[in-house]
Image (tube, rainbow over all chains, first blue to last red; front, side, top):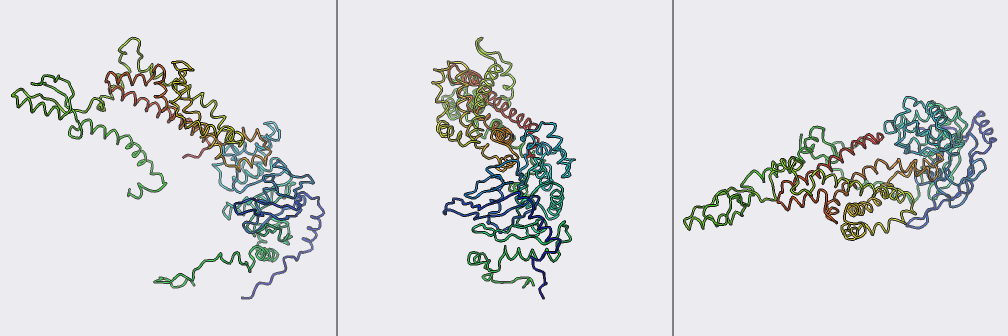
Length: 304
Length: 318
């Protein structure tokens, strides 16, 4: 079989190139400087993140991708202020992040809706905390719920909703506070493929229409390429920035691009970065030892 | 249904067999009790004398052990006297179900033997008051402390080590002390129930509070909730259903301290009724009183469970 000839993932059409040039002219929304994170464990100190540097521009969609154990969840938790970095800083619009706050909305993989509150009350939670009166909070909450298409379920409790619907409520809840940045930690990881695809296009739709920067953690390569302007590729042990990829697939995106040359070229590059051919010694032991199996009386001698 | 369906690991039985098995859980002990009471050859170690015959010290209606009866009967025959006759029966401390069933009714309608003594319903009411106040006082302090200890490590370290120690001290051991401080009436009894419940309560509720999903707290923080809002808008509503279930279990424990507490100072309430009836050898009444405690406890728990379903509609049906 002849290998499919693909352009380089670095090749950008004029339109794409122009867009990235303009994108980088925008003000910086989020800046991460020399970020380190160490954990103390029984076996000594573990470095989860080492010298992470990157910038996200206003209304940019950044995906963070990497093999398991690369610290991508730790990174987003530090951005949210839920964990403190060992050294380095996170700046949001030039101001240092010191703890969790409503200027950075967060969507978790596990939905984390408050089970004792109805959909409406869940979305109202942040608005009330921000000091809005009950009536304004309710009014705004209903608008956000309508935006994610769940007007029929305002009075339902979370346990009555499907996974995709729960995550839509979580997104509405995070957006209701009108944060400057939306942090998403593998938000669609627990959804089935159809729901996931639908959620991806919902999210793109929201991103296009709201003044918000998105940092999106995923381990799904297709998801990262489909959604992102730029992809921050991390590598594991220790978690470091491997490469920042400018996705050459033109915007606006739609599912038909999933098999385009740019898309596949980017995917091939991500594959190389995340699953390198030469795994090194560490992973060499991570193999099955099927050679030891002795075939006796197999009804079907070979699967091929 | 095959046996594998009856004994499927962690699977609920279908509705009908499920109700049936629950019914059997009551039917089984009652059946055993009935068999022992009504089938003479199973146990019945005593003989109730009907005709004393030639035995001088027997009286009609008297209960004697079977061996003694047999001995006296043979002696009587040997001495050419009229042999005594009697029927086999259980000892007086094991009344038959129908006797207890009758007592369940008559114990409420029988006038007390002495004017100063109380009717059963009055005794019961005393007991319920003692439990109520003991449990309410304990909860008044125990629930907030438990939630604080479960939420803030500071309070956990401040309260829990001492409480861990104190909960091993048996509540009844404080009886004499409680009487010395609080007198002989209701107060020391309430104190015993308080001591028996409070320390467990703080620890149980602190543990329940700690089981709250921490990601809910994180989500709330990213939505702008600060310390006080986290406690009152996330922790408290988040643990409420589990806390309510804990309280039901703890109320059951409070009941177990009732009998001990009522023996402290002047004995009163249902315990007084039980000891008094035992003194008169009215064991049917004793059984009736014990069952009344069980019935009150169980029905109260079922009532609370039903209220819980209404209070916490977001809880998935269990």
